[in-house]
Length: 116
Image 1 (cartoon, helix red, strand yellow):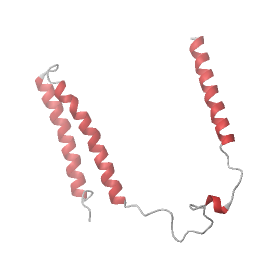
Image 2: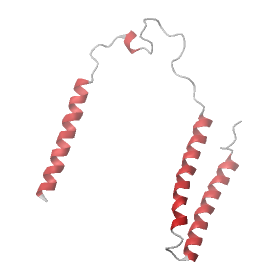
Image 3: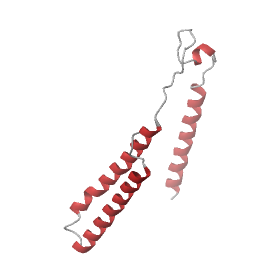
Image 4: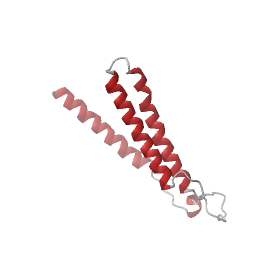
């Protein structure tokens, strides 16, 4: 128990030392307006350095990621069919697919999948 506590303390201590050293060494000492600008050529930029981002694209990307993760949860269902009761396997997979379909229809009827 004592060795585990010592190792934990040493790990936390080393972590804080590295974090403190990185904040000291990474500080910029010269704060120049031209160096802080997006272009270091000496000229003021004509427009914004950032492009506008469509929130519709972000919403569709998040929905894609959610359903992509759920597909990875569906893959092991086929391999567990032989090791479980067929009724419980069928009921569980049917319930999971039903929840996915309800979520998809909800997003569809809310208009999140329309790109207009």
